[in-house]
Image (cartoon, rainbow, N blue to C red; front, side):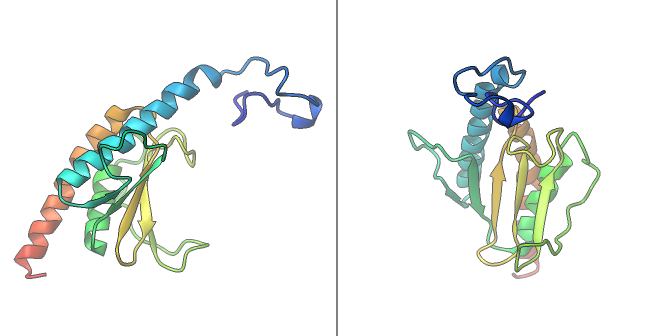
Length: 172
């Protein structure tokens, strides 16, 4: 069994001092690797999106960025939709799904989600999401391999560039 806290058994009350006897965990060997990959993915998102001219937090190039989330200010609803569409298109699960904004409990605005990996709902799941309101910030996180972010970002940037051109052509 793989628990979020490898030191705990399925029944946390069964061991009064789990920190003293962590026991075996199939999660433990991959945890540092997965965390490192997610952090590298976030840095890649920051670098690529800053190079595309978008405001990114945390900014690329910082010596130590402990955040698992990279925020990218896209500036419009249409750009957020385009970015999420590009990310979703390169997800191994549900790549055929077109993310659409919708009402989600706990949010005062419509929200758009792009996610489609094998760790549904986990912090390790590669995802991009955010509420559709100014300044239109998409929050990117997770990813068990930084290379997945490289592939997904290529698609997202392609979608964003097409949307920017469409907006220019429409005089927006």
